[in-house]
Each structure stands twice: as C-alpha cells, then as structure tokens.
Length: 254
Image (cartoon, rainbow, N blue to C red):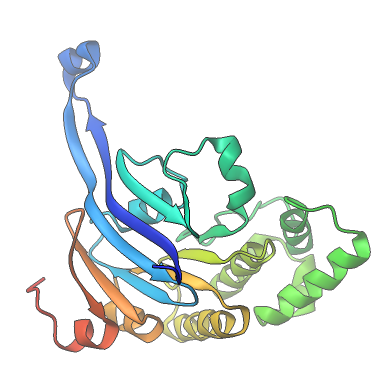
C-alpha cells in the first residue's frame, strides 16, 4: 500500500481490571479487550470514519495508533515506518506529524493562558522561529480556522464552544501535521456550529492535504466527511466500506 500513510494490523489493547483483595495481592484480574483485533488503513489525503456507540473502543484506537497509549499487540505503520514498539524518545520527532483533536473542548487549552500564548507555545514546541515568523504564522492560523484576530487576547473561559474548537484545531495545525485523529470534534456543540466545524475540517483537508481518522457516534456526520467508514462494536470492526453504502445499505444489523 504505497499510498497509505497509516496501516493498522490486528491491533489489540487490553486492560486488566482488578477487584477484591486477592486480585490486588496476586496481580491477577479480569482482562478487558478494549480493542480486539482491528485492522484498517488510511490513504494520504483520505478520511476514514470510525463510528460506534460510546465505549466500543473508538477513542482507544485513536490514541493507540498515535502511540499515546501503548498497544497490547498488533502492528502500526506510519508512512512506511513501523512505530509499534518505538520508545518515547524515538516517537518525539514523529509527534508533529501525527496529532489529535480531543473530544474535550478544553483539552490543550491552558485556562491561565490567552489564545495568543497558546498558539505561540504550540509554534515553538518543535521549532525555534523568530518572533516575526511566529506573528506571521499566528495570523495564518487564525485565517485558516476563521477566527477573529481580537480573540487572541481572550482566555479559554471567554470563548464559546465553537471558538474553543477552532483554537484547538489551530493549535494542532501549528505543528503542520500530516495525520489528524479527530475524536468526536463536533460533540458538545450546537447543530449549526457542528456544521461549521465539519465544513472547516473538509476545507482544511482540501487545502493542506491532511489525512483524518474521524471518530464519532453520529453516522450522518461521519458520512459527510468520510470516504470510508468502519463500524465498531465491542472492540471490533464489524463492517467497513464506502461511506454512502454504510449509511444507506448497511450489512450489519448494528
């Protein structure tokens, strides 16, 4: 799959649940398969939607393919490189290329920092640009996410939900990623704002050549942004196909 940017093979993530004194003392407990043998791939500049009810393992997959969570087994290949067992130090240079938009609107937004400082910090994580370059990039980021310049002086608590989401997206774009895992990016937003966020993500993909793994429990939203859709149930992908087919002619009863 030479055009694939992400290949996931037989991915598993299990958690141990320890209850009672005996389990704690012996270190034994029930094993919970949050992700159980999942395989899929993403081509460059493509969106694959991951849909399913809460608790089915969607977010765990997203975090694991980015190596924010270590897999129990399986294989994760990013842009031709096996990253399954890379150390934190080895992963660091790749972090800027693989980013996540978290479901929580406040994730990554320091409540004690103004928007300008939040973006300034993001721009200096992997590089040491001049202040003039930073100012130029901040203007560019605001334009990309359709956010007014006046919002730079605001603290996160002074922003609406939609504005927080835009700042979060700008923060991710600051490091120029190639792959973005978008975890329920429209949840907790009004319907009208959801549409704006969906359109924004589509425009960004078109102009920046981004690849998305789009996670949601809302199939109509997933259909709008995705070329392919994977349906999850109890830690497994039970159906995968073109977005239109999954939305209107599903094979699986779930």
